[in-house]
Image 1: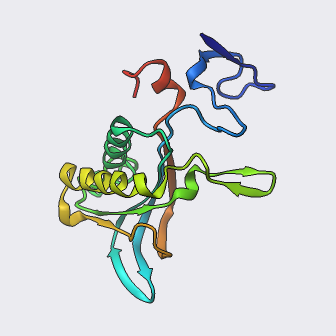
Image 2: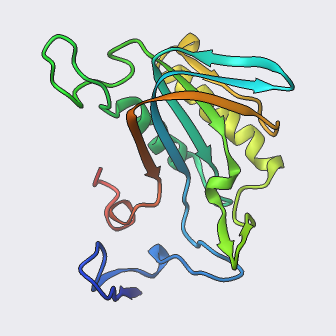
Length: 195
């Protein structure tokens, strides 16, 4: 079954047919597709404070804010982890070429922070988070995602916030450079081989 996206302008997706499963339904059950989201920021430094105590901090590297959708599965975590670790957001100091190296090549650290509000949307003027993964399910799922980052890179190079805590996140955005990842991008729904 196909759905039709009839945009008024020439924007991406206008006049394009997508599988019905790839179309986001707004309403009580918003979001039929998996949609793990990550906001990635290139930073000079960053830290997380909980109840007046610094629990994590990094120098140059990436801050990765992660939101989990209620229907996310292991393949979504694999996609986000792979993309973050391979994102070429750094300049090659030897050649001067911009957007040429990832955090691993520079031995930079990554700071992962769980942020369920990334899977929220506005219902009128009020945020609605009912499609975000429940805390009971999200806690172990997020922990496994952080562990995936550590196994794919270096355990000491991947820091974490505190799940479910009220955190004060301080960072110096370098650039600024901020990228957004979504595990349910249309190209992935239409053809899983497309990166």
